[in-house]
Length: 177
Image (cartoon, rainbow, N blue to C red; front, top):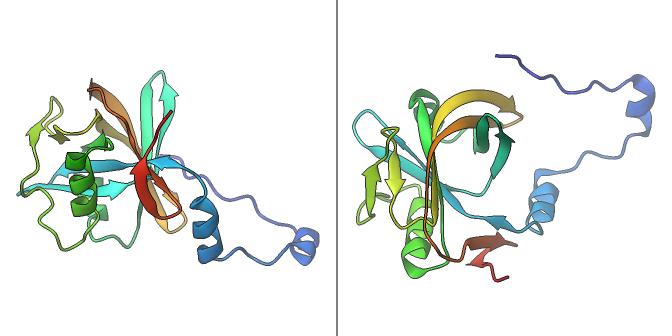
């Protein structure tokens, strides 16, 4: 796997560069970007795992690739690295999905308790209430500062009708067109 290094600055650029952007500034600015809400799931050795994620994006149509990222300090980072795959469950703006989004965002919750799910064709957990589920094989992972970027090759897709959940300025809401 090729590692991509950041572009280095020369001395002249460093002397005129603006002050570094803080994590708080970046987080606040990114809050202005409307995102969907997903729950990424994977099968662990003894049980399924999952967490709420909004850092999800398509990468390529051929091959079909998607990405998401996770804080390197997250206690489940190694689990997702070693699972061999994952499912990105796109959540809807209904009460069942809202409950799951909140449950899967808490670190101390039994996240799958009461959740409707099944093992997909990839063997990874698929949340039945999601409006779309993309079952993926882990295709690559890359360092991304304080995060790891997971790229998955999409093996199977399931969808249902529904309005998507949205995240904007720290608030969970519904997207309306």
